[in-house]
Image (cartoon, rainbow, N blue to C red; front, side, top):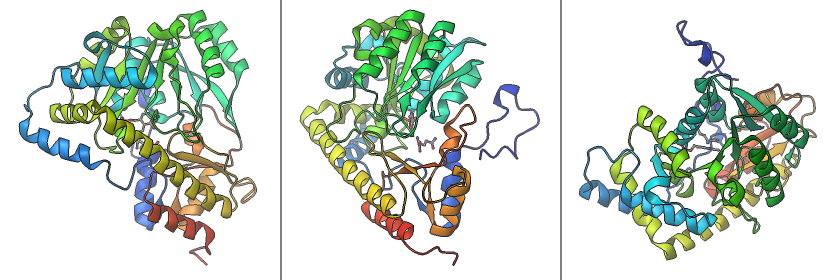
Length: 398
Ligand code: PMP
Ligand code: GLN
């Protein structure tokens, strides 16, 4: 569904085939049709007051010139503590923590720091769209490893073949967008073995680290001692605090890998807004508040997951329980057999007034029949209730 119609003729070849992001496209469509937007993953409610107040205060008191390129010392120290507390991995704030302009920039910097033209980059498919874009910029070649529905089990044969052929970088997103899969310790051990065998770098995108349900434990690949120095771990304040507009993220890695990531970071954005950094640091430093806040976050989102799952199940979708992220994947195989995911997305917007994401856009290879849609549940309860009412109600066009 990528809209490439307005693509300029002088566009560099490596960008051919990319168009406006599906997230922008679906949000605009939802707005135009008055549909409930369960497509783009952004909360339609405010994040914590404490962070808003800290930002307001730091606007007044912070300096407003370039922040140090690698990040404000206060935030790097706070991130090092937070990472140690949540993953068990100790990172030195000065040499192993880099503050970036959102996780998106950390992903771009990491891919471009380690991938040469023609290098092979392993990704788990379906894959978040930023990875393909960053790999295209670096001139790398995607090597997709299928996650098979309905439980999104890894295709280990594909990973074994990729290991034998060698690769420069492996991208692991856990908890995983769009499937909600949280990779377990056995899976991480097998991935770590492939990393040891190839000596490749791993980019671990853990932006949904705090969103796990039913007591599921998120384990960071970087906490496996045998690959600690091969992993660049990326996370973001945007997800943890529910403010996607913040665009403050971080990459934590060994000094050697951090030096490489910092070179690309320096060449792209150089540094990130200082008062946002120090305000986020202030909130992260309050251990007792953070423990309460993240526990509440999980409880709130788990209830929202259940609300949306009930609504979709009631409307005839099959919805495997998701353990992480704020997305569910719902199968419409019984509801509308034979439709493609793009056709079903269109039908849902037009006939029901609910917008979702067709997951075929998250594929590097043609996925074959894909009777699934991705719905975001990071929405107010009344938004989810309206979606439930529309999904269960009569078609709007009749
Ligand atoms: N990684 C994944 C898997 C995501 O879903 C998102 C969504 N926003 C990002 C990275 C980007 O994070 P940020 O907003 O911090 O750039
Ligand atoms: N990560 C968000 C999602 O998956 C969207 C990010 C974006 O719009 N670029 O919905």
